[in-house]
Image (tube, rainbow, N blue to C red; front, side):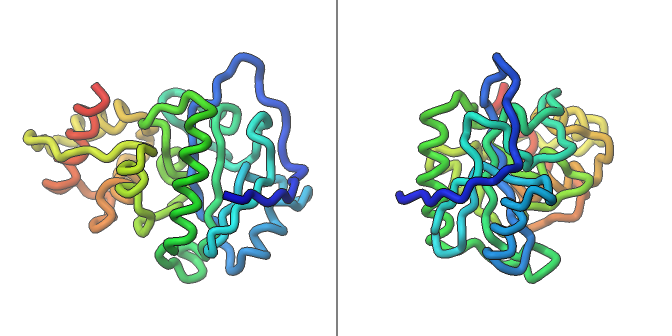
Length: 225
């Protein structure tokens, strides 16, 4: 895989002793790849990611993995709030929900799998810490969204895909506790459940518990236990 360089000024030093143990996947949410590349390398924008993958599979490295890219913003996962400080961020070119959300092309997904596999060989990133922007910021983000193929990534050793549990517990308190056990911040239960559904139940993204969502959530907790 050829990786092109387009350095972004939007990064800083990582804190000493903090492992790189998360991989966060985004979509750009902009109308074109060129516009996304300009923004991610514009010092005035104060936003970046380590990598950008175009729809044709072209991979751009914007920030060295040793540095802290500014991609997560206000976020939370498994008790951590400085997600930028412990993660690698990958942006996928896609117009997003605002500009005509569409499936992620084969060339883009193939490059992502290759890149993510390489990243996992360099850093101790557990499967449960391969997440989307919506997972770590459910009240304000939806990316990479319900059209992203998380199951395919898990089948390639990137992230986790649960088998549904035989036990279906739809109790509100149980659902909130299980979402927290996975790693989510459960301030707004509807938004958090919607983020879970975008990742693991993309056919039903409404923030309401149902039989299949409950079984998948239970299966994920069981797999992580």
